[in-house]
Image 1 (cartoon, rainbow, N blue to C red):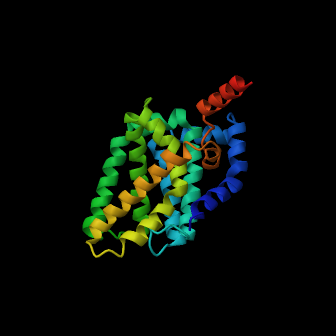
Image 2 (image 1 turned 120 degrees about the horizontal axis):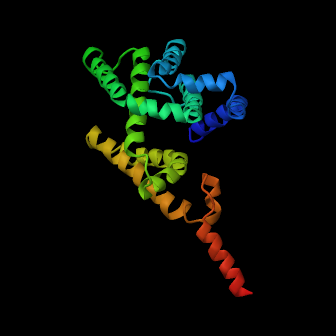
Length: 240
C-alpha cells in the first residue's frame, strides 16, 4: 500500500512520456496548438468531464471514492496526470479561462453536491460523482489562481513539502490508525485525532529530519540545500 501511488505515477511517466515529449517538442504542431486553443473556452473542459464520466461508467467501481489499489484509481490517476500536464502546457490560455469562470464551476459543484445530499443521500451514481468532482477541482484551481498566485514564504514552504509528505503520510496514517481506532471514543473524535496525528507527524518528520539531513533531501525530491553546500565549502577552505 505504501508504494501504490508512487508505483502508479512511475507507470504514468513511462506510458505518457512519449506523448509529453512530442507535445513539448512540437509546440507549433496542430495537436499542441489545438490543445492550447481548446482551453480558451470553458466548453473545452467538457472533454475532461466526459473522459472522467466514461472512466466511471466503463470501470464501474463499486465505491467511487475508493481508489487505492483499484483499477478505478489507476485510470482515474492516469487521466488526472495527463490532463494536469495539458493544463501546464496550455497555461497561457487555461489559467485566464479558469479564473474568469471560477464562480460558474463553484456554483455547479455546490448544486451537484446538494443533489447528491438531498436526492441520493450522498451516494449518487458514479457518473454524477465524476462530474461533481471535476467541477470542484476547476473551482479550486480558479480560486487558488486568484488568491494564491503570489510570492509567499508559507506557500513556498508548503509546496516544497508536498511531495515528501505525500511519500511518508501513509506511515503516520497507519500508525495513527493502530493507536487511535481501538479507543472507545466517538467516531468523529477518532477522525479528528487521526487527521491531527497524521498531519503533525508528517510535518515534524519533514521539518526536523528530511529538510535538515543533507543526503535525505534528494531522496524526497528536494534540491540540495545551498546553505549547507556553502557551509561545507567554507569549512574546507578554513581547514586548509
